[in-house]
Length: 484
Image 1 (cartoon, rainbow, N blue to C red):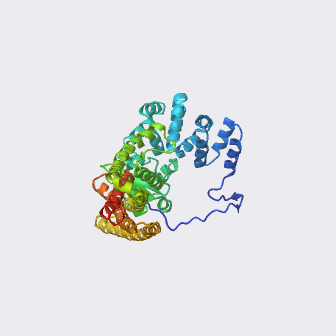
Image 2: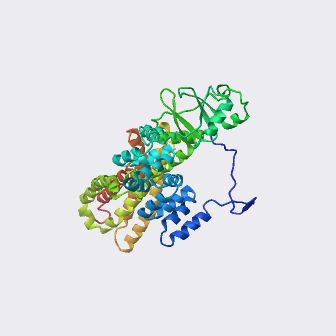
Image 3: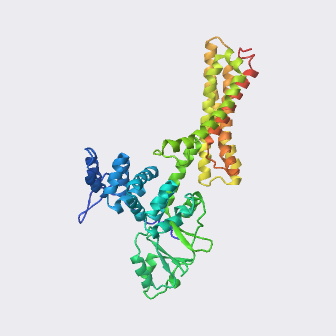
């Protein structure tokens, strides 16, 4: 199976001429095309002129340019661009913006929108189609060539978060019965493949039979049969494997690409390392949003409706869980009225406990994502985090409790409230770390996503326990701190 070549290194470019008329550009520096686009956008938009300039940009830069325009202007520029350049730029755009622009084109120029998708890599086109409402999706597919539409419908069978949903069908494949000369000619005629280092070997029915590097083809005799010189051991994955598991496989074995096969070992497509980079970025974003109860599909450019559906249910959950802490405070209302310092210390202790819990939660979630926390290592991990919470709690407790005791003595009041603060800080930080390290592991054990609203439930536990421990200790030692 193809793996990344760690022996190859690329020196950073310098932005200076390299001889023979070649000029090297440093990554990230604006090109002449970028500067031209920037100049044009400083004045009133001349759509044909701007479209011509955007065509000359790299696709990723063209996508940034389109994203910076108002939607109506971006659609006009896109419609004026060369179809190939426009399709590439759309593929690089933020999905919600690209989908919104496609919807505008579907209403006005459905045939043009269809051409854009026909020119895209199949996996990119499928991602956009699956993000469209069903009605717009069908209108768009109806405007496309029947063969392209059928191919995309086949890809849409697979869920977006699976290997099948992220694979591309643009790859080199040759028949095992071919000669090297026939295989080389077949590859030469094949355009648009995303994998350039290897070709997959299949039989007449499309079953995966091996893999061969293009270098091997170049050095082999033209008369050699592919079946005799190909590598027969090939790692492959099923189309229904979750994309997080796919990413772990790429990370663990350093693949550059993995073929996707069905239950009969027929080659369906290929997942490439650039798709995996997108997965890692998307999963990191989703986990961060799930932790605070935001919708997993929400993006900066998502509509208000999408944002509302993703957030409001968790706001209701947060409202209910926060009420538990409020009930604890009400239980000790009389004590708080007698000692105003308790009201001042409660949010401080709860905040420290919550912050300690967030630290443990973040480390634990990262360990789960990277598959570092195995079943036999879960308990030692929880014990380490809990011990750390206790140590940090003691140190913070001594600092804060000592300060409170000193202030109370200066005011002529009992200093023992400082000791209550110190004890509470030690216990609550320990509880915070215990909860932060345990909660995602429990959710994973129950089959739930460990990141889903973890922050909401963590806050519920740390706030409730902080109030309960602090006010409970204050109540127990009320005779020493001047209450009751």
